[in-house]
Image (cartoon, rainbow, N blue to C red; front, side):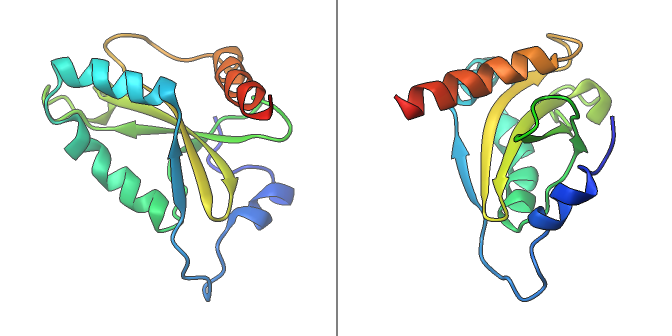
Length: 137
């Protein structure tokens, strides 16, 4: 996995130094369900997620770019420490999000590394397709 999207897309995504606007974060129903389900086992999930949310709101698109999702989608995966298990980021959560524009981020899904090893690009495409398919119709 690479850290940055291709140059032709990264130029569009980096906020300029004079752009102080806050990034709007939208949450998919799928993401809300993930948080609710994980929250039943991990009481600190919202606190663990807060630092990443603050980074995203500030326009810092953290994590690793996921290539091959689709040509028009810029999707990242972020490792987040699970403070309930005391094992570090590698055993923590994975947050998948899409950068829609310099000022808009869409939280797609989140899972615990102990529940599943990885998410496929096909699964991410399916989540995006369900969302954009339902929002267009």
